[in-house]
Length: 343
Image 1 (cartoon, one colour):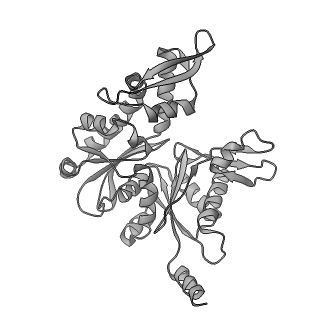
Image 2 (cartoon, one colour):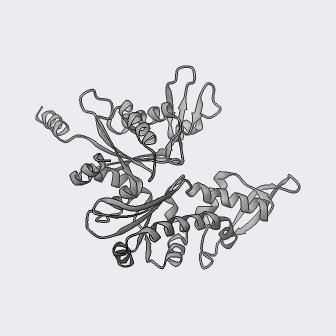
Image 3 (cartoon, helix red, strand yellow):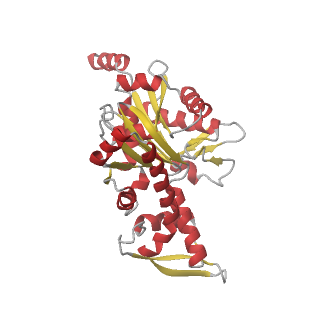
């Protein structure tokens, strides 16, 4: 009995806090003392006749083409494109990680891309409230990423984070808990996949699908001419004959296919650096640039950004988890919450 009473007391005076990285391709949820409690593709299976959510994540993806289910990816470039599907997604996510309870609803911090509009922010907030949150806060991805990477962003020094997600890339300089200068692109890891597909089609006359492009990127891909030297046998369709074909692809063959998105990301970083106040720019020479997001794991990414900016660059520990972890951490920072509420 005492254990039950303590649990009720703890839940009443220590609200459940949930940090959500609601990404275009993947959704990650972080909870204090538990770490990442959910990581699923951002996809929903819906019954068109009733509007009810049948499944989310991997299970929903498997339901494509099965009976009455309509499979929807509700986010595009990091923002909500299908409101009802997003509500269904968040409702299922919260049900999985905290359960349904009329009295103890979680506080939720959700990450949004830098530069989202007021309409887009309201859509995320309303979706989370309808899904069962007691209170919803929004935090821009770079702030959450910096917190999750362990950067002391409340200090009066300049810190820079580049978060490369699946559908968006954000670069930001921050100080004293605020973003001072930022820029974002609605491209990310998927753009590298598309670049590989185009390169193989146009230069090597072989057509491959997205899953294979993702595999190539992770297994042998590099953006650096001085990068890895690996090879992989790939199979696809010959663009000239239309017949199945295969070839041995080297890591250096991937550099050209990955070049265009990398150039865009470097241009985004340059825009931020060019507008950063001189005193904070001086701090960056000491503090360096920190890379987060799944795109940070692309071989040679840190090296190329350092070469292109002349600023020391490193990849954060567990870069895929930084945004979700930072979102949860933000709920414990009263000063930062006041800043976020003022937006």
